[in-house]
Length: 287
Ligand SMILES: NC(=O)c1ccc[n+]([C@@H]2O[C@H](COP(=O)([O-])OP(=O)(O)OC[C@H]3O[C@@H](n4cnc5c(N)ncnc54)[C@H](OP(=O)(O)O)[C@@H]3O)[C@@H](O)[C@H]2O)c1
Image 1 (cartoon, rainbow, N blue to C red):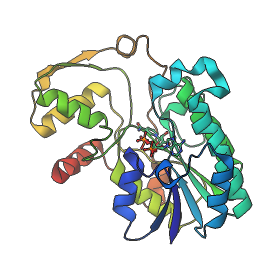
Image 2 (cartoon, protein in one colour; image 1 turned 135 degrees about the horizontal axis):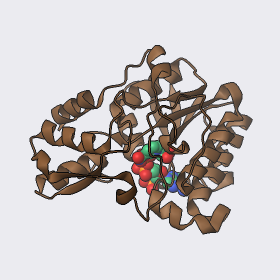
Image 3 (cartoon, rainbow, N blue to C red; image 1 turned 90 degrees about the vertical axis):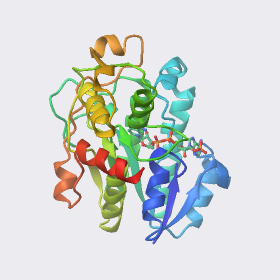
Image 4 (cartoon, rainbow, N blue to C red; image 1 turned 30 degrees about the vertical axis):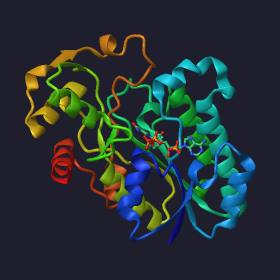
């Protein structure tokens, strides 16, 4: 099957290509192949010309702090232009060309005030990045049966030096013998990117639609996560110093305090998402 894709050079997208390229042929819509997704005409031209049944849309402006600084520019901000306006171009072209669209969203669409979040919980994004990603979700939802939204959280993989994920950053810090602060009251669900690839494959071949939480099976605090990373890779756990969410993120973009997304729906669909310990063990094996 041919798959159109955006963001295939990124942290998540490039691993999806690595793992699925023996089963799918990817048509890359990227700056490298002459497609700036904020350019409506080129997006439409390339989507309409393709015979791929699906477009997997990974491209985004993902710099959370950078996006927040641009909030005052509203719809002129680069986060809005890439995450909303370009998504609108893609949705419109998919409608025109009768294509299904898989859009990747984030746990940040939730405000973090509930204990757990399921797919039918109503988002209430706080930061500007999150606002723009949720606007993208709403556009994709307008495709009905042809729209698929997967929400991921804190993705990590074994090797991607171009944009180290949080596991890689913590490993580097501990390897260099540095100490680090880590919130012991916040909750998140780190997600192994190889599992996201398996979920993407399953959802695509089954022609799924709607919203799925494609997140890891362990909800824990960043402090617990950092401690587990230290233990798994044989670093000194005492270098991780507990702090509070409020102190750690003071002056930074708003993000959810408790983002314990549940993955029952994708599990019932047949994709088992790793626990954080399992994901780390696999990362260690792959390094
Ligand atoms: N990383 C996270 O922590 C996280 C968490 C939750 C959800 N997500 C979502 O998961 C998806 C993938 O994230 P990621 O971390 O893999 O992203 P990333 O590494 O920051 O990569 C972003 C991708 O978007 C492409 N892109 C940006 N602007 C573009 C434009 N105007 N035209 C064409 N391509 C453009 C980039 O292409 P170039 O390389 O050519 O610039 C790159 O391939 C995003 O939708 C993000 O919102 C990420």
